[in-house]
Length: 197
Ligand SMILES: O=C(CO)[C@@H](O)[C@H](O)[C@H](O)[C@H](O)COP(=O)(O)O
Ligand SMILES: [Zn+2]
Image (cartoon, rainbow, N blue to C red; front, side):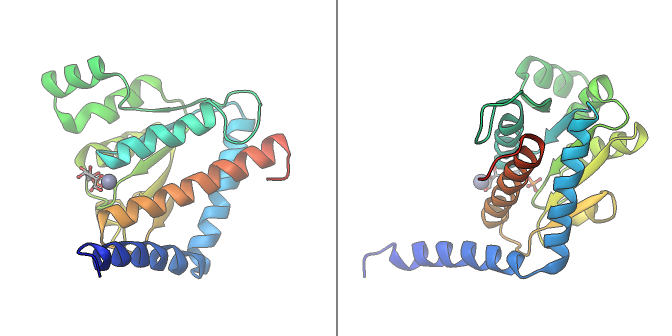
């Protein structure tokens, strides 16, 4: 056996296990379906969708936002979606002049309208800037879809919809977030624009 074989197998097997557990988790499946309906209705009513997260979850946030604002499978009108960390001038100024905790909350206050939606991605459920964004979302009000790991952390009781991935391992949680996020993007596009994927 080559030196990395065991570790590679373990990572793949754990990623598969997490996704299989989700597949057989009726409550999570129902939540995913409810989120598809929420996204369809949100875009149909002309509202906007925001995304936030840190590190790998920031990458996931902008990746998923681009599936809506760009395209997923088909040529169709762009859907209004954006990740809140993409303007580095804004991010560095607000982190510097206020605090890093405020970066997403402040931009959400500037941009969001009642009826919009926030995707809040945090594997721990405890990132302070994500929590602050959720607090502001509740005030506007903007509905919140939380994506976390097994515990849900501080986000556990703060979200309108909570997708708690059954793992405590950050990369495995992120991989499941992307699978679920892609599936929601695919179905939202399918329902809104009608095609057989
Ligand atoms: O991508 C990874 C690890 O896979 C890291 O960049 C990770 O996202 C960062 O450590 C984040 O700061 C973790 O934040 P969170 O998921 O707990 O909100
Ligand atoms: Zn990562």
